[in-house]
Image 1: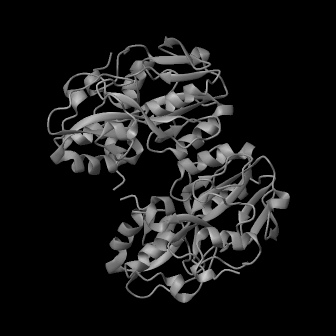
Image 2: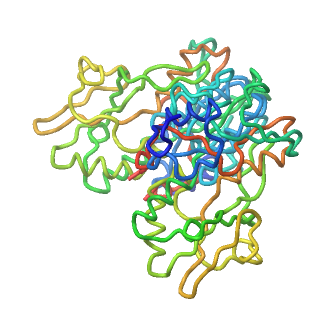
Image 3: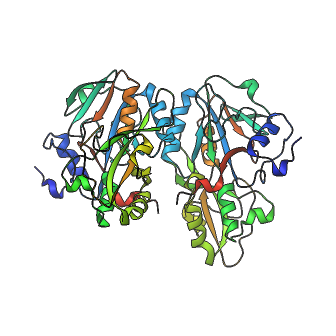
Length: 263
Length: 263
């Protein structure tokens, strides 16, 4: 067994592949980017890629496997996307079927795996600038909401944007927008600041996914495009088969967070 | 006939559609972005989209038609991509076959049209900051070179990056890099500054495409990823059929150049 606290991404992926680590990946390999997984059959891959291209804020693509390959060759050379995530979910016709620790047994030659940027990277940047990330401070999951903002449709895929929310003190709102704007590959600048009703959120205390967090006096709810969007949209099209990571069990890449900085 | 000097993009596209304007589009609709065209059958569209996603500097995608549609619905609602460009080129099995002013007669239901960002937009930004763009001052075509920098391959598509070159005085080089970095959707920051041999260019006075320009004492050759790359790469894969715009005869969008600014 390797010491997980100091493992490199390659070592950590290997430990996961060998079944030595079956827990959520938050906090592992600090400084390295983690990613969301969506696996679809090739005949849906074009529509999904086009949907992502048209909606880069909720769907920032980090890597796409070649058809027939299980390697994330750009962000994690030598990886095996069917085994290097601690827990997967299997959906059939848009319905959750089971969780698996290894999907190599059900992998098909026509599968294409998409890796999408995740907010872990920009949350690290916020905290490094002394901006509190409430759900991390509270030890809960980030609150997520389905909005009235429609994504640009593409082929079989359409649906509303899902956003995550972080309460930010008034005097840090502009700074938070500037910091996250530097990271377009991990959702980038906020999509909305302030009044939740403007984007169709009726009750901020009742998130559609994740846990509610306290908004203190003098704080503003700030909303970012969320990586749950592509999973929700893909599921809505009821593909015969779709694999994803299980929430919180992410893919660890060789990319360092700061490599995402656009400027 | 409309007055071409003051026409809106919609009016200009209509004039072109009606055969009233069959000339290069440089200088038309100042402030509005123009785009490069690549049309491929659907069965090659996924590989081309993935190639573009993996190589965003030479292949910045502005819009993609839905299969079976000829409208660039995002950047030019109401447009007809088969008729709104003054001159097209037709390639069969990677070989140039003919030029046409209208390709609606040979359009197929399985065609997908890709519109790619073009350097006109960032050249306007450079000139607005008092940085001379040599080939425009000289009234010639921009010099372009095939480099030793390989694009990331995707499926059927692979090949070297083609770059364009603009000589910039030493004291303006950083400024030119900063200005163009703001426009990632139109090739963004330079890919190389200085010694041409570093990127495999043997003789700077002999461009592979376009016209040579003078590099004056005290000037540095600065290289940007070029929109000829995707056409060259697509052609190299010898698709049974491919349509492009004829060089200089571009598609005029409703997007204003400054909308591309990322920060």
